[in-house]
Length: 452
Image (tube, rainbow, N blue to C red; front, side):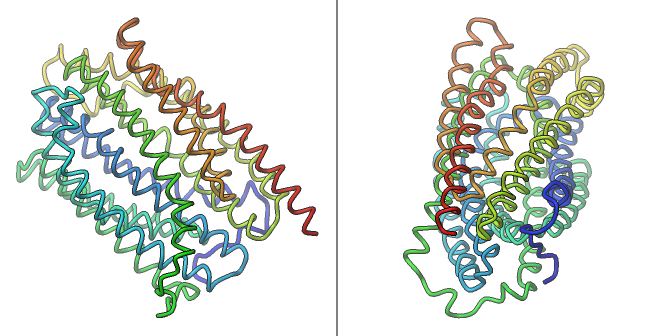
């Protein structure tokens, strides 16, 4: 069955790592073209343009994250039905996910464009950067249907154990984006719009590739009856997807509070913060990959009623996550400044100040990084078992911690208060997720004993 993988048999650690590795490589390429966007804009357009792109980070995530969360949540049911060998139910879940995804993408595209300027004004985006930020975000929002399509197709593939096809899609998108960035920004001098257009074209390429792969999977050959609307199934998919979408939206709202605090320090601080924030995705990528692996692994094994394997997989993932996060922390402490320097150009004094801000923020991210890795693993285990409610609650706790720190600490201790936002949010979320996982796994274990 092509690259489809059954994760209900075999060693948990090997399955999780082998599944996660292509996702990590895919994340590397995905973040590579994000970093290239940032580096080329910062180098060839200037620090002000870099700050403009950076001011778009959290506002973009607020909207895109909701749609992406829905797509990922709906595919939990696909993994569970695949693990239970219910291929008819799996195909119906796929078609209904496509329908819901399209509706959501169109709706949120309209909402995003209507609220863009008021949101940036409310966040006190610096006058020097707000025009560039609006231009960049108009392009990004216009591609929301494409982003949704890619996330749906790639989530379907991951639900069936295929983590290699999303990797290939990201490689193609990365190469395309880098080439188009250089062409549009450096050669054609299109500036910020050029970087945004390059990103949109690359996203289209990745979505098309994943769609072609999905179409070739024999057990996903869709029939006419699979498209017949089932209100019960729609409700079930919404019940799984809505908490993840809301969770991402909640995290996005917290991020807006951070963006508000960052904007208040001026565009040089914003540029330095942006440089390190782009590395955030890089240091988090393995955590996201482990999360996807654990979600698929837990979903398939829950469908197969192999609860003991979920426990084994979680223990293995925690140890792997701890080792990975510590290795990344050490690497960034020693190599962080060299990497950050790629994104900065301009007057020496401006670069020096932006570098100071960027490296300090990077240290605040890396020291508690292991907590972020645990957060992804435990949250994904719960989601894979069909519990999207408690992860959503953890998102509310993240919101409270992130907003509280962003609005209070910068007034008391200055810029370090901004840097503490992420670590505080991670601690709050993990305090909810760890006990929630053990409550859920015990419940599933007892249910399995009763049915025997």
